[in-house]
Length: 126
Image (cartoon, rainbow, N blue to C red; front, side, top):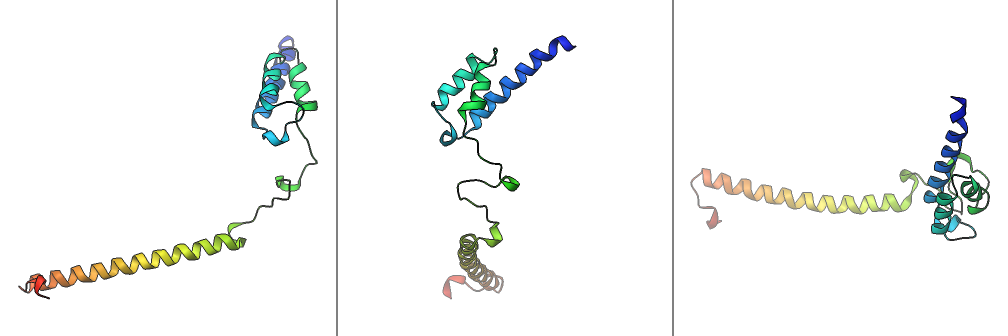
């Protein structure tokens, strides 16, 4: 079992570096274009040169942020604290209310036609 351990560790590092390279945004890739880094990781992964080069020199690594908050000034705001989201809800609510009023008016008109039909009146006369 121990004789397979080095092979498994190399394979795990190779897979990790490949997936990390694919998932890294283009803006965070250093030195070479992202496609070139993917090729380097794939071609030189068996001898550990590609994955180690990627992990050391290929990606901008910044300080860890608390709670996984994005860097670059972007800040997550919960929907109930976001005024733009709340404004869009109010606009949607107005549209829904107008649609509901139209449906209610149509329903009243149809009910009136049915009542007149049941009473023997011609609904077109009204």
